[in-house]
Image (cartoon, rainbow, N blue to C red; front, side, top):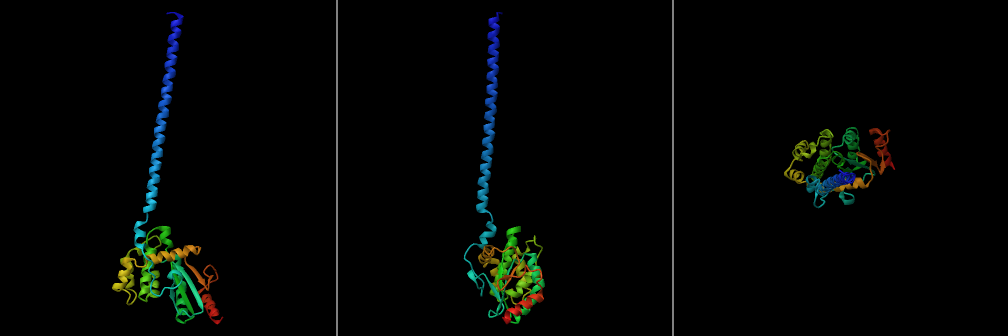
Length: 259
């Protein structure tokens, strides 16, 4: 074989090898594009699923709270979100923001409710209760909302204070959403004389005041408060004061009445 022929064959083999490398590179790029496109489609689908979930999420909790805001009987304040307790002519006003699932709120009630009751019964103090759903928002569930609705139903029956105290005395562990069980809320109403009536049961089961509870919680968020309980005496946050005691609270109220 002549040198010219051998050179021609070698050149042909080299061209073939180069062409094969080009084909391999092209195939690799094609596969990369397919994989890349697949990832984009998956991410796009995930984004769509996320949007759908965001738009449809919380249906179980929100559907019951949709509808007109129905304030409980005797509610006061902006949007009727205040449940008043005590003589409204009293000079001193205690404002309390509470969540029935909140352990700190239960601690506050255990320590201070006897003094609060003494002062309201004596006509020296009026209390403005605002009900909040902070724990529902933090841990999930509907127990904060449902118990607040039940307390509003008790307000309709003129039994708010007694039922309010029963709920805190029977508060479940924070992560236990027991108050989402409406049968439990109705059963606890049996501890308050005259509260467990057909009207109360219907109010609890229908979530009559759910939208009102949502409005109250909205007011809490707009108020910029840091947590529950938030306790104000004549507008001053007193629960953050480490020196506060039931006796000190009583003195502060007495001083307000003298003024």
